[in-house]
Image 1 (cartoon, one colour):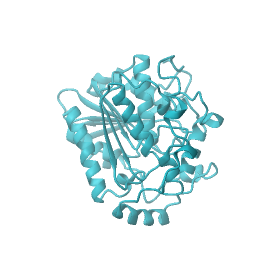
Image 2 (cartoon, rainbow, N blue to C red; image 1 turned 90 degrees about the horizontal axis):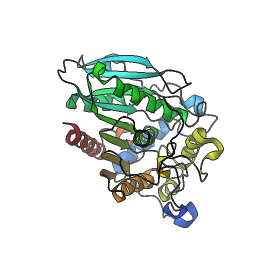
Image 3 (cartoon, rainbow, N blue to C red; image 1 turned 60 degrees about the vertical axis):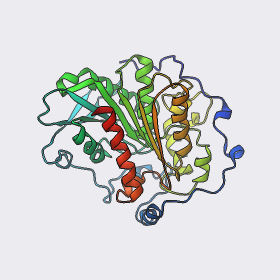
Image 4 (tube, helix red, strand yellow; image 1 turned 90 degrees about the vertical axis):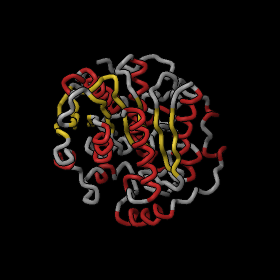
Length: 347
């Protein structure tokens, strides 16, 4: 598998004026949190250590009893899915990677697949994170789920994480018959850092002539290493992933290159200058979170390139609100919109 980044139209950086700096934008105060979400956020901040520094990364990686990883039994949905874990070849010269595979039981013909990339700010998480929600969608679609375990920063900086994700996608498409997957209906999906990696994998697949993705699902995606949009400035010190945390995550991935002029779009997809030729895209984000403006910009530039994108900005949503406060009315609306997109795309 090729591990060098191809020369492509995405490799240059948009003009500096396309992303306002913190000084030039001078945003007003932050938008308010949704009342239900704001009340829950107060409890979350009291129960969970949210301050992130390079020194606290190991601590943040420890299992959190408030968010235990789902077991194979839970992921099987009472026997509806066959759950297994496979070690498959990673990028050239790199270790094997682990794929958690959940296949619908009793599916006669090959079905669609959701290729899932977990979040965690590029520095945390594993391939079980976020899976219950994804498998819930898959159960209604007759779809398989393949979730990739990628190496984390700072121990593995760019391009290691995205290359791991791409290697897993290539293996999945190549073994579609074995997995009872239709290789023409694979959707790459991820939230937060996983959303950024999903966007990067879609760019790599396009530029390398790799698997033809049927769609990309980007939930509150982490796209821009410059960390200088108005929303990033507005939300400093607020929510669960603020300006300071974002800087830690991007610096772990890119080191001293974070914010430089020549950062690769396969590290930070917001750096891509050509967003044409991408599969149908779903993007959603909260109005009260760091990633709001980079997500809106990414959708806008897909439209400007003649592509198909559906964008939702949920009023008063903080980063990860849907997962952390699923009972809130706005969370239920977000879940319904996500499911509706998958249904229209795949059913």
